[in-house]
Length: 508
Ligand code: HEM
Image (cartoon, rainbow, N blue to C red; front, side):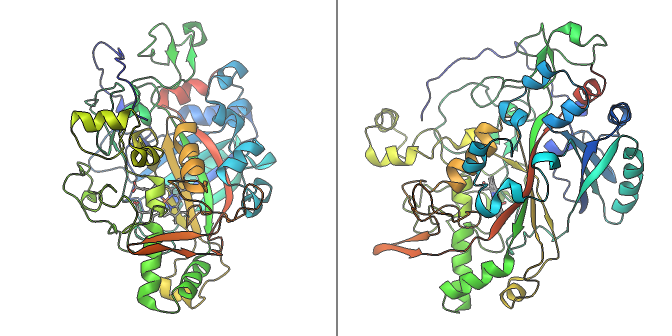
């Protein structure tokens, strides 16, 4: 929906961003740090756990030359805050999704598609007693991970039990199905130049206000996302910064973000063998179908035409693969409406597509254009961006090997990681309303072709289809799609600012 212009007074001057207080993962994907492991921990000795968190060598978001050899990041679940002895009223002032947890409510599980084979009761970790308290994410340049891991685990032992080791594999920027990944990312406005006010934006851009990904800064609505703000007497040592929008309070959220971690098992053989059946064994057709499900070719090229009008992301080397939106393909003739990247980021602006003239804009704002109304359902992408930081795991196989059944039955997939300041409006919205929903952009009976869990919905309506619009006739519709991705674990973490982490490790 187009929103009315609201003038929001943020801070009178715009203070610089405190990169030294932000965990580096918000700014860097650590792509050169090709080795990584995520440790899942439960607190066994509160005092020892706090002592480790108080002095852990967290890598910050400052640019260093050369880059550090290794990086260490820390996230905490709401159960983790409780185990550390953080006061209940402080925990309750985090977002409700975080407090309840990813697997903490059957209605959330239903909306996220965590049913049937994805049901949390079947997860390897992340539900019931297997919800971790803390995640320690370790990244290292080639050859340096095992040393870092060994030292870190020794330091952790007095305070924690390590309940899970999420190992990762460097597949060279290719996800297990065989597609180039990590290409499209929102570009954060680190210099705080983007106006933090809710004025309708007529075309899609990839730049996001900092407050979309970091608490304590204005978001795309020009507002500060709710977060824990404390009376100064709760912070006797004066560790926390004051809130920009409420200087009488200490800002426990400032420079923090929410981190979503989901272990997604991928049936790579099942994927290529199913596509081969649909393609009648014709290799070129098989690859074309796979590309239409993703919205990009295996090498990352988008299947819609690149446009010069779509602003490429500034210092992103892959910007040339991102200079497109879907305005030139409203019916999905080039890129199906249900393709993964089109669902995950419809690249729409606040106004449905149309001319730039005043009358045209007014007609669309007022909703008089019926086609525009339908498209408006997936509009305003800028409020639903995700900063993805996932890592692959398991032994890689090529599409040809997978087709021949090599590695079938082995566990491989994606440790999906994304960051955002608002779990509900970002991860949960994208996952439920866009990826899993069978009612997306005028479509029925299908959900995301990669991620859908294919269980019939609403009294038996099928959800296992994928339709590809055709220029001269009805859509081609694949039916009986198998499930290719299974959720094997997951949790919501708070990735605190570094001062906030020190505060949390000492609060009573
Ligand atoms: C095993 C599971 C998944 C696989 C194999 C997968 C694969 C891909 C691939 C190949 C791309 C295109 C490359 C790129 O633009 O970076 C992509 C883009 C994307 N995916 Fe996924 N993905 C998975 C899960 C998810 C989940 C769970 C979400 C969100 C809840 C998600 C959100 C996105 C987004 C936001 C984009 C970028 C779209 C754009 O801006 O154009 N993906 N994914």
